[in-house]
Structure formats: C-alpha cells, structure tokens
Length: 181
Image 1: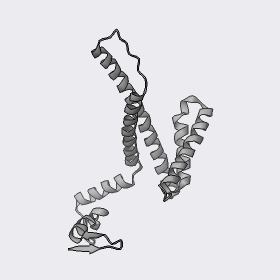
Image 2 (image 1 turned 90 degrees about the vertical axis):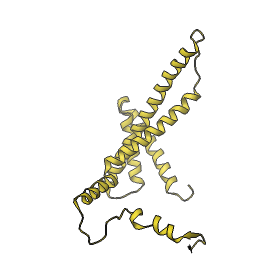
Image 3 (image 1 turned 60 degrees about the vertical axis):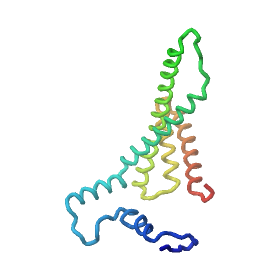
Image 4 (image 1 turned 90 degrees about the horizontal axis):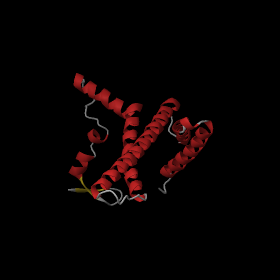
C-alpha cells in the first residue's frame, strides 16, 4: 500500500500516518473537548515552559556551545606545537601533555558556552520584547554579546567587540535565511 505525493515519491501510507501524525509533530496528545487531568495539565505547563521559555533555550544553547567548544579545543590543541622535555620519562611527558590538554579544552568549552548562552539570552529576550524575529534582533544580540564578553577590557574593546560580533552575527543570519545555504 503506497501513496504518491506531488514530487512522485512513494510513501508507505501506514508509516506516514504514524510518523506524520499531528500527535507526534505538534505534540497534540490530548483530544479536543476533553477535560485534562492534573498530570496532563502539569505536562502542558512544562511543555509550554520548555518550548517558549527563555531560560531553557539559553541553557540548551550554552550546553551546545560548550560541546562545540570542547571539540574545537581538542582540535586546536592537536594543532599547536608542543615543547618536549627529553629529561622526563614517557609517562611524565604524557601526564604533562594531558594536563595542558584538559586546560585547553576547558577554556574553549567555557568560552563557547558563554557565547552561546549570552547570544541566546539576548536574542530570545529581544524577540519577546519586540514580538518579531528579524535581522535587527540578531544585530542587537550580537552587539550586546560582543560588548558583554569584552566588558573587562574597557570601553574601546567593548565597542569593537560589539561591532565585530554584530557584523559576524548578521552575516551568519543572512546566510541562514538565504536559499543558497
């Protein structure tokens, strides 16, 4: 039993009806007109909070940024030249390299997690305040993130961080919204 869609592809109708069911796509697990139990009401509140709340999105982006930062930290650690002390034993050299490796990965992980969390916080907050999702939010979020990250280095550094991060964010947003990417 197969269906033919507009593109000429054949689909299994039973598999389609299960996987593309509204219940799974939009999490409409409750029937209309039905009274919800207390457990179902709690489920809906949690579901709404996780999908529409700013903090869960920020935490997710922070975790994703941390994971990406760990991968980048591993990559860049393997690319940097190492000083080998031939007076140490092989085991001592490995131990020293592993300590440096952990520090490199940790620093990269923390920095990317901060960037992901802050950018997501600013962008989601601006989307809630402005009630729109456009490139202006991305520019403001990039500017605020760049300025926040370089806060300890003073005003000139904050201004350059704002400008560069806003420009980078705008370019990435334009690429994502274009049909070429």
